[in-house]
Amino acid sequence: MDSSVPQRAWLLMAAGDKRGHGGNAGYDDQYDAHYSWDSNVPNYSKLRVGDPVALWDKERLLGISVLEEIEITRGSKLLYRCPACNTTRISERKKVEPRYRCMKCRYEFVKPLVDIVEVDLYRGRYDAAWVSLDGLFDQKAVRSYAVNKGDINAMRPIDWAAFGNALIAKGAGRAVDRVAARVDNSWASSRGLPMAPQGFMQSLVRVRRGQRHFREHLLAAQGNLCAFTGGAPSQVLEAGHLYSYAQVGTHFEHGGMMLRRDIHRLFDDGMLAVQPSNMRIDVAPTLERFPQYARLHNQPLTLRLRDEQVDWLSMHWREHQLMHLG
Image (cartoon, rainbow, N blue to C red; front, side, top):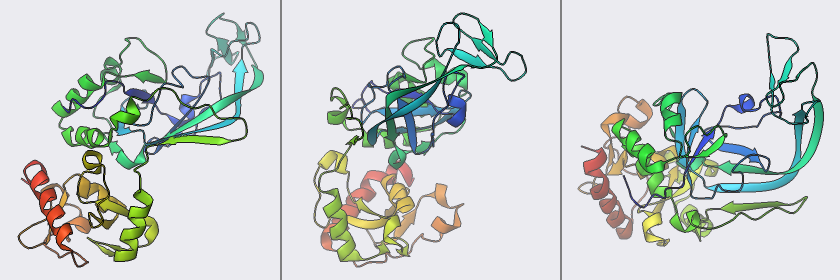
């Protein structure tokens, strides 16, 4: 496992409305794209852009990724409290009356007190690097990698080194590599998140400096064209680097191609590559069962390449052929 991956990482319990308990109204998670929390939640301010995350739903592992953006807004949260001791540590029961029970003072009651509090609302996005690992680990295995044994918080630190090695042992090394390639240690070592003034939005984004101009340059030069599949709306096209931007840190003028989003991800993983000998597309065997990708094999690219692009594609081939193309 890549030793550059920081130890700090997070296990996030994402179960949509199920993540709400008797004391709150739940969250609007879309577990393969974003995760929501607020300033009443333990560890709320500790997550950073660049942190690896693992998502689970109390029963099984869902997938892993890297936080790419954390958006902070000011808002309200609906809380339900125990009428006896005022805590939010209450449980809602479906088959027992009275319906509610306080987990702190054990008081049973029909209706909780309703309270509205002002909080900072957080939304972390991580869809760019998301890898589904649905069911690879059961809940017992997932819990075992928490840094603090017995931790019941929805957001808890996870031992990323041990967890990553376990994923590799389960055959998910490519997923670990994807996360490692997107971890930004300079972001990960930053301290503190800015608090959002009331009524305003503030966010931390792992920004690739010049990325917008890089995309505009490629789009102007290439048009609405995915280099592998042909014409596509600009909304689904991304500026794909032909090299690891995380390692190089520079946008080379002819160091990219416009790629459809799914093609971009497969290209980054080396599952789609370009053979240097004939500049034709090579499709990894694991994609052969998917017709939309299998038919790309041995097809020419849909744009005329510059010499610099040929050089970068040849390097990409050498980097990935042993790992993914057998």
